[in-house]
Image (tube, rainbow, N blue to C red; front, side, top):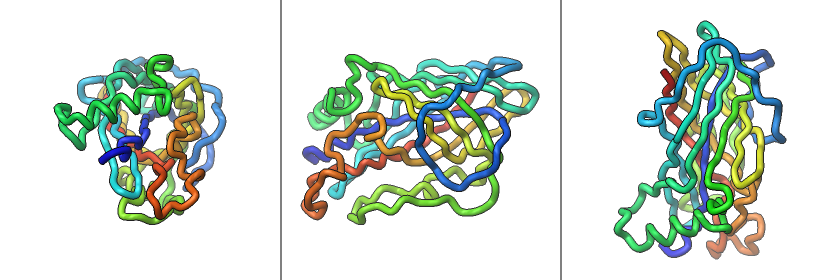
Length: 239
């Protein structure tokens, strides 16, 4: 298991609002955008039932776990989302593919918290703020081509929630860097509650989590790299 533990992951996360714009079929990361102002009623995120899962990969294996949502709110007008903000506690990150009593758990957890990855001492939180929402149109989702190994990262089309309803865009801030991420999600607003599910990939190096960057691997067959792709899945509930 060694420095398979270096799968520096993140996270990270997600949410919503209804806005205009044409549908797209590409999960993407771009520069930060203006945050949606929000209007209508404000619903509090249920931290106990909301979860952000992550999976990180290298050719010899993978690690997975979750990062808790510590606080958040969703703004709703009628049955439309108009704003959202979520805070994640990097220092409370959990690893679920091994027991906490395993000495490798502590080594991996400490490495993820270090300057090689999240630099949690200086940046203990990650924040997601909604920027826009577009209707999701039927069709396939573009998948990134990955270097093939026994543990090639799951594709965006594999991770996507069943029957997505919207393309969600939002600013994700980690390690002092803010990027806009866009991904498909299944979102419902009914009876004073919001439920959202999504799954997608991010490139960790866009936020400066560059340890073991696969682009610097001279010979990928020698397993001297960590995939830059990290899979993120969320299940968010607000009431």
